[in-house]
Length: 164
Image (cartoon, rainbow, N blue to C red; front, top):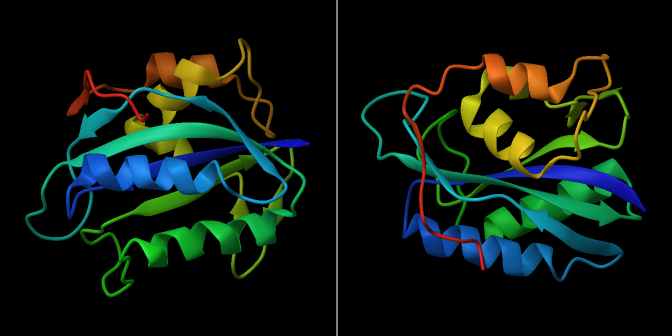
């Protein structure tokens, strides 16, 4: 089974409930096993216009499905929870991003691995580092711990809520 790291985010329609519903759906994915859950972090919205703050987390799923099949499953969960892709970086009920799929590198029209913006996002790096194995090395050879230690924490606050 391949380790797949997935980022979760929501800033609409009860974000805490959106994240918890997503975790329940991820736990039911065929050919996959939900293994680790980060804490939940509140972050300042990145994107156009005034937006509510986001709730973010990262989970580790061990899976036997291909990266593209996993992406399809993630997008299905987003749609089930009311995700509408109308505005890039706009507010959303649920955002599920496939960050890493083992050590695989991939660049297609539908999916890029590792996720191209993950190393610039504190709301991804901090929860990922929280649950990653010590000394997790990204496919380019960079240590996750180094990236997480060096990223600014501006606007990022760990909440007391849990994903389950």
